[in-house]
Length: 316
Image 1 (cartoon, rainbow, N blue to C red):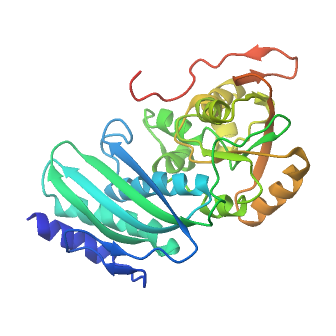
Image 2 (image 1 turned 30 degrees about the vertical axis):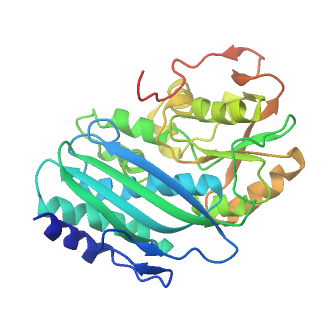
C-alpha cells in the first residue's frame, strides 16, 4: 500500500528537470547543482492541530506545506529547484493523498519545482517538506547584515492569516474568505526575494510574527529596531472586519504571514518599493534599525507599545 500511495503522489507531481538524474523510486535521488551556483536547503514540518486546523482541505495542506518552505528560500533570495516530501498518515487514505498532491503540485508547477523523493509512514497527520534552491555564490540573503540607519520594510500585508484563524470560529466564514485563504494558501515571495539580492542588507520571512522574526535580524546583526504601528500594511479585508487595535495586534505577532521583512539602506527604500511593486507584492517602510538590541514598537506620540505576545513559540 505504501508504494501505491507514493505512486499516486508521483503521478500528480511529476515535473521533468534536466538536473534530476534519478528521482522518485530509488533509495536516494541523484541531482546536479549547476556550475557557479550554491545550494540553499530548508525544511519545515506541519502538524495537524498545530500548524493547520483539523479539517483543513487536503489540497490546502499540500499547498501550505510547500509554501512555508518556499518562503524560506525566498528569504534567502534563492531560486527553487527540488523538494522532498515525508508524510505521516493515520491511515492510507487515497482521496486525501490525491488532494494533498494536487495542492502541492499547483504551487510547485509555476516554479518548475520537482518532487524527487520522500517517505511515508503511519502515525498522527504530519507533513514535512525539504526544499532545495540555487543562489549566486556570496549573494544569499542573510539575517546578519542589518546596519544602524537602515530602514525596515515588509512585503504585502500583515496579520491576515492570524485574522483568518480567528474567523474560523465564526458560524459563517464566507465574509472572511480572503482572510482564511491567506491562512490556508500563503503566497511565498520568491520573486521579491530574488529582486532583493545585492540590495537588502538582511532578510527573514515572517512566519512566527513580525516582532519575533524581526528580532532574529536584530539578534544576528547585533542591532535594535524601532517600528511604527501606524505604518503596518493591512489588507482591505482586515480593515473591513477588524478594528485598528486588532489589526495591529495581528500584524505584530499573529504569524503565518510568510511575507518578507528586510532591511535596506535608507537611500534605496523608494527604489526597492518600486521594484517589488513590479513583481506584484509591493513593500512598505515600517521602521528603522538603531543601536541597541531587540524590537521596540513606538507610536507617533513616542510611546513604547508592548505587544500582548511576541509571536509564535513552539515550546511556550
